[in-house]
Length: 410
View: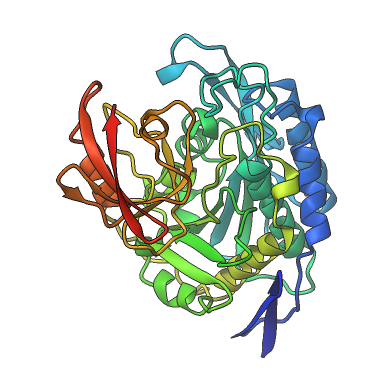
């Protein structure tokens, strides 16, 4: 019996697991990967761009050096697909993009998929940036999702080079086209390069580089997609790092594609921030020791999987944190998903949107919208769904212990 040691900032917690190694991940390695992927040289890794191709080659070189097997098209590392960058697939640039796929064959009965998207917003001209002056600015995407790609690389390195032969095969996947609508992962599950029926689960990492140092919260979605998930994750929640659980298998990232094929999933996420989808998402703001801790949790979860059977798949109510509800209006905020506050905490207020014009501030907690009491993301969405463009309402927020009434026009 070994102890895994998590260290981030000045926080340390010890968790007993039946594992045969010590701390396998290092902040320097994580920063090295993110440093290249989020560099100016790659110009934001826009889908199908030269910068994304450089990122793909970087991933391939590491997969190859660790002895993984190519598992893309026709025995290559890449799986290509067509894309269009326009809104709803219309009117934008189009071309070919590539997933990068490596396979670790341990001659096991079942396979664990470990993935994350490696594309980002490029130079901000595809219409997905949240910066009002985004066009022509490089969006380096250090957290979104160079951090998740670094996680895939580090887990691939560990599982491919450790001394123990793991009881699972592993498919390591870096997807393109996520920012345009989960295009790469959807293409894979509809055109799989391995037998989907042999996959016991899919682990997804999207934005795992900003674990907060003062109140660390790791958000894990998909808890309801297999009976074993809740018990496994509960081992890792402590005062040093709280595991915030979300049951839904559906959300705005690549795990949704696998869930829709009846595969149990877990999605790891360290929370939103004011740099999301902006040029300011840079490496200087990455918490590498925090990501190290996230990877240790993922490794511990995998160590706890049953080896003699596949995980049983469970359908969940699609009430995911970010949801898939279509609204006629937007308030113009980034909600904080890594908070247990009653109400909805505002991580960031977006410039020139309805909330900004009404005087809402970063850190406000929305407790009421019109007649709807807001207690969480679901009730917030319920309240928002009542309005159309041009409507006005009142929003009550808590700020510094006081309730403040704001007049909002959508």
